[in-house]
Image (cartoon, rainbow, N blue to C red; front, side, top):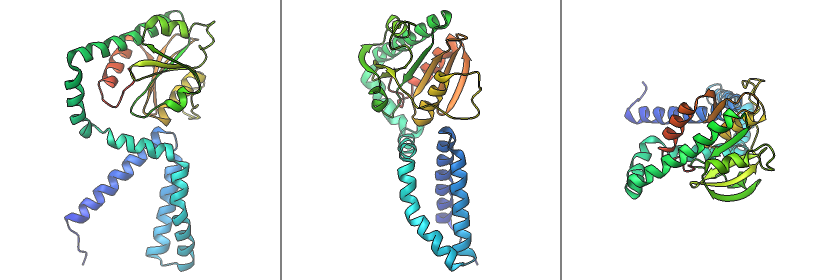
Length: 265
């Protein structure tokens, strides 16, 4: 007779939650097929070693499992880092941090945060009208220092005219990405990872794929203004939303920056 108690229920719930977080992380980073492959390997290993008691196959798979964990840590260090950041910035934990966050700044902090959001929105609205291509990345909880170093450091106050001048067609920095971190324009002309997701429409160019790539690799928010159509898009948590109005962009940025996990704007 099976001895099944409350402890076993908690055990199953914890494992299920862990697998769900890993699944969601892999899905957002575009590596879902690897997750399926790992799960299939674990199922074969358990069946061969524990259920069928196949000694030779079980021994070989045991050796793979012993070194496989180290290999997975090396290959997916960015995803593991993001998983830990996601775990630490979960809504349940952010509640207490948010109390101290607002207590420290008060209404003045909220007004300044809204000013920074509107500066980005006004710049995107102007560039959308003139069909000026732009790629703006707003840092989340994960630092973007390694990406900022690929461009030119600026460290300037967030200003719509400065953003427009940087992405002006004759500007030497207009082809790269702008990174906003710690409430300032940190760098411009930055190089971002490109997403190779097959679900991205072919009509979308390199800026959109770069925005999705940084959204898959980190928890940052990426804003794209299309040079061909003037449409505004936003990428976050491995998803790309296209054809946003300036009002929708304002609401999205306000919602995202109201979370403590988004530290850029």
